[in-house]
Structures are given as C-alpha cells and as structure tokens.
Length: 302
Image (tube, rainbow, N blue to C red; front, top):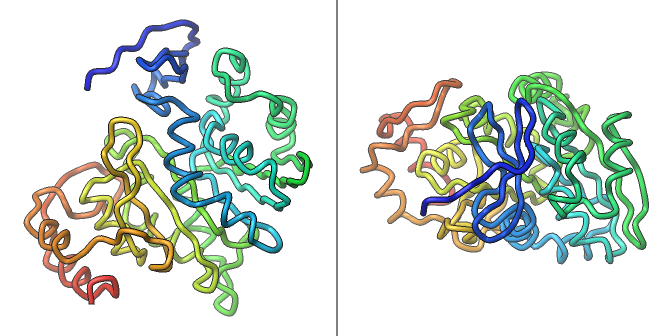
C-alpha cells in the first residue's frame, strides 16, 4: 500500500504529515521514517500496546506500582495513550521512558493541537522535559513518569553489568517492568536497537517472578528468532494498520496467546532472512547452525 504524505509544518528535522485516514503524525526527515504510519499515533498505540497487553485488565487487578518501560519515547503518543486508557482506574503507574533525544517530543508539543493526542497532558510533559520526571494524580490514577535520555543499548549494557548477582532484576531504573512498549526506528535505519545482545540484556533485566510482555510492530523472522534466542517466549501479535500481524514476546508463556509453533520453526530454518543481528550493522542471512541448535532447545518448542 503506497501512503501519501504532505507537509503541513516542518523544521530542520521533523514535519507534520497527514495520513490517508485523516490522522496527523510526525515524520523524521533525518531517518526518513514516519511515526505510527497508516493508522496514526493513537490507533496504533491502542491496538499494539493497550489492547494486546491487556493493560486495563492487568493494571486494574494489580496491587502496588504497575511498571511500564517505554523504549522509544519519541513524541510520547504510546505512553499518553496508555495513560489515557487507564485514567479511570484506581491504579499506580510507574512509566520509565527511554530515548536518545527529546527533539520529537519538543516538536510535537509545539504542534500539540494539530496532533490531537496531548489534551490535558501538555503541562506535565513540559515539567518532565524540564526536570526529567513528573508525578501527578489524574482522578483515581497516580502516575510517576521518569525519563532517561541516553543511548539505550549502551545504557542497558551498563545496567546489566551493575546488577547485583543476588538481586539481578534491580537497577537504577527501579523495579523491573510488567510491560514494555518497544518502538524504535526500523532495523534498516537503527540496527543498534534490534540486535541479539540488546534483547538478551533486556531479558536479563526482567524478574522471572514478575510476568512481563512486550509487543513490537515487526513480524519478521529475524525479529522473532532474535527474541527467542534472547530468552523470550514469542507469539503472533495483533494486526495493526496494514500489518496483518505483529509480534508479542514475554518472559512467561501465560502472556502469549498464540505462540509460534514447530511449523513456524521449520519455516525459519528454510528462510534466507532469519539470522539475528549480532552487531549494529543491518544485514540478512539464513540461520547459522549454532542459532538453529539453540532454537531447537528453546522451551517453547520442546
């Protein structure tokens, strides 16, 4: 499906674009990629994260802080959609956002009215821009939102190194997450965010006793193999936009409704685009013998 964009407002790095369904989003001119293409910011975040993670249901029944890692803050559409979807619940949310830059959010706040998903949160986001965190109540909901500006792969690797052997799930980011919103630029544009070492480190930061799920918009064989070899259980995710399916990973099979099976495994073995990225350089290759052996030993396929 060929999408049509046209410029409404732009600066040197970003521009507002209209999508074919009438939604407005942001395009990075440097990366040549549009945030939340096809259906727009709110619809994609609702389908990919809120619905697929069953966030309302899980947050409503959870006691204490429900921790969400927002990997790729961008223009904050994912996190804000989550907050708005749960604002009528008596829940405590701890949102930990990561990104290497605040420029998309600063641009988005300048054009908040055109984007349409900021309503009521502008002042709180400006406080987070100023202080790196913001805490507030919204009816019965309480929110503690923290931002880390850094190169995420390097930040994660350092955090894993500093984790205590006795308490490996604890870090400077606070308690381990119950849910992860993973939204990076594509592997072709940002391969460092899609490597096997990164997802292995991310899996190591999870608490085995704390169920955690992570959707991603990619359905590629490379992505699914990468997540499996990192330690996750992996399944088919919900459709969003023009994607007929996405991918859902978790540290427990209980959170994966449609797990990949041995038929998928056989297709991965035959694929010419299945070997994970072991370094931040984008390439495609069939499975190595080592990766194939490791996949066959994964508990999901036993």
